[in-house]
Image 1 (cartoon, one colour):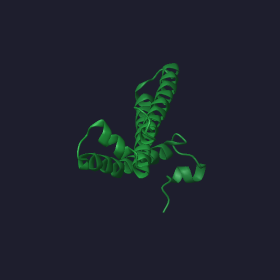
Image 2 (spheres, rainbow, N blue to C red):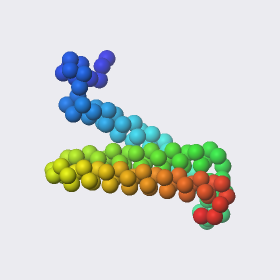
Image 3 (cartoon, rainbow, N blue to C red):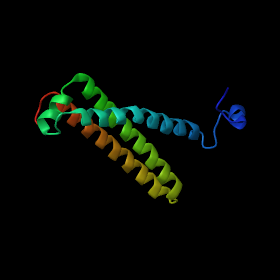
Length: 128
């Protein structure tokens, strides 16, 4: 069973050459976010307190830090994909669209890097 349209099979292209790939990435990131988000909420609710010391000690565990990094990266990627679709659909001026896509891309990379840095810093025992 192929997920390609008959025209794509003949031409080797999709309607926009990458639309199906983008659609699949959105679905995969959303599916990945479900268990990560459930784990995050359940883990936080199971802590005895939500003060800085308790949360920092929780983040000090390697598996917790790894899952938090995966959550931050997946959420940033999913958010970027969603905003890309919105910009491509509703911004009609080519130059503005390109500028917004670049700015959104940089903003998401910055936010993801800042999130990962913060998680690693707290997990390593540094001051927040």
